[in-house]
Image 1 (cartoon, rainbow, N blue to C red):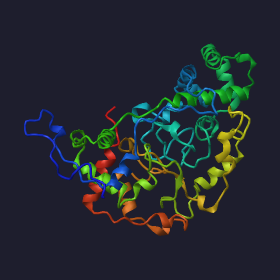
Image 2 (image 1 turned 90 degrees about the vertical axis):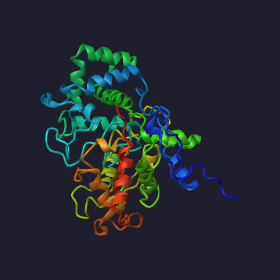
Image 3 (image 1 turned 30 degrees about the vertical axis):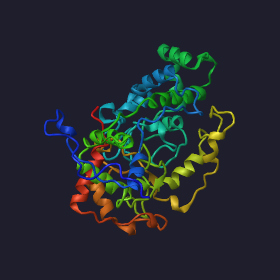
Image 4 (image 1 turned 180 degrees about the vertical axis):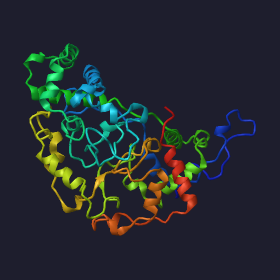
Length: 381
């Protein structure tokens, strides 16, 4: 016997005298398969988890230390700017620029830090396997904060407030630490703070949960245009193949035709090399999990030609608020992004990427609906 469809199309679920006009609407006739695909994008928020490689993870005192470091311009050489200079809270922890600017111009877009702790690999190229290691990179990058391990240790050593926060966060004597240990623990505190940066619930989440509960009245508050866009997202658009799960990202990498075959930025190809060569990867001495079980994905990682031109698939939560788009910031609007996929140039893709992507040839109405859905992934915060 066929599975009954829970929500019928064009079923008006309120009366003319209803007190809440926003709830007066209809719910599309989603199939059982569509419904399962929608439910797979939740629930939100997910359970809080800690990072086994970071002793500071989940520690409020360490997060307080990390927050102070995050907003401190002295972390950069010549006090040129703090972490928050690029990751601005009022911009959902981005900067609104096509490509970031630190001590010099960078070639990549500044990603949002909201929900960053839920990633498996960090950076557009996955050049780090922990949030704390990723937090160390901009400090010493000549084009970003242009500082050093020793400068970071001296900053902390010369500030009584920092020393007190260090000892409270890590329950140890600051004077027993060498410069590299201070540097790494600063990165772990920065990560502990960033773990607290979570986005709120959205209109989509309310719809998804209503669908799960079979509550037609609550589900009908979700605009029909967004529902139609959601149907395209999980169906004809195949967007959810990569933008999967509650974060709307499977956390891996892909070549989507933005960086051509001859591009100087090779993305994941260089990122794998940097990760495996790093002293601060999970195979190194600063992983706080003694067994190193958490390092298995890094241990098994192998550089492959297909990695050339691949970049991390970003989360779509809050995507309408984080213009411009793609790893190099070349697409100014969400409509530009959708149009890129609608008119995809297969010549710009590596041979390994082509089977997974094809031009979608959306009609204008489908694009408008898809944009309505993507906007529903933002909060009102």
